[in-house]
Image 1 (cartoon, rainbow, N blue to C red):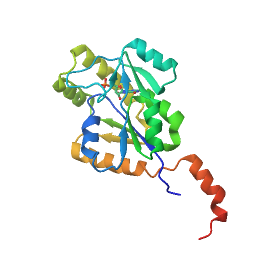
Image 2 (cartoon, rainbow, N blue to C red):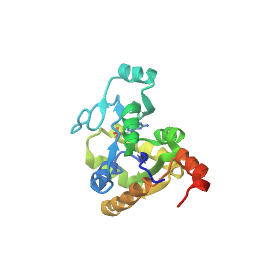
Image 3 (tube, protein in one colour):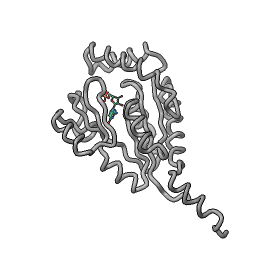
Image 4 (tube, rainbow, N blue to C red):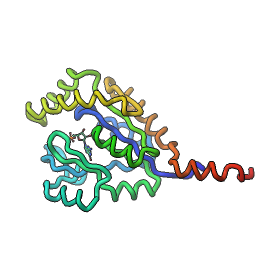
Length: 208
Ligand code: 5GP
């Protein structure tokens, strides 16, 4: 029954919430996982690498991918296109991996609609708006208007936390990482609906 099957862990939260730092802290403890590298039309930031942080493409290429139905989900965030490619996700799931997405609230809705029975979702946020502002300013990779736009988005996203299975308030990185580790380990035990149905159908006939 507890045969290996792939599952999904969605992480959402404002840029500056510390999602990447948290994943880096727990990646040695959560077993075999695949971190989904999204495709985006937003300009590459200093320190980012093609194929590591994102696949950076222009709008034409992104739209072609939409038409070819290459995305599990896609959305416009902060005025740029972002999308999750279907093919590598399918492969990782078929290999029984924990597939981790760093996507926004729209993406979470879409993933839940398509893969809800194997998905665990977590919203990660700094303790307050003012703390988020501080973190974004210290990161200093973005211009003031970009930061303001992100803060405005964060205020909107926060209103949708109740759509998530878990909330992590990333105040202390070690504590938050420990909670995320436990959630990731638990996410693996989620059993897909078809496996449950199969078990129920066979249950009466199972000889021990
Ligand atoms: P950033 O530009 O700071 O890397 O990401 C901006 C926002 O886009 C974040 O909230 C991030 O979670 C979200 N995002 C990144 N990739 C995807 C994606 O493939 N789909 C969706 N829906 N959101 C994404």
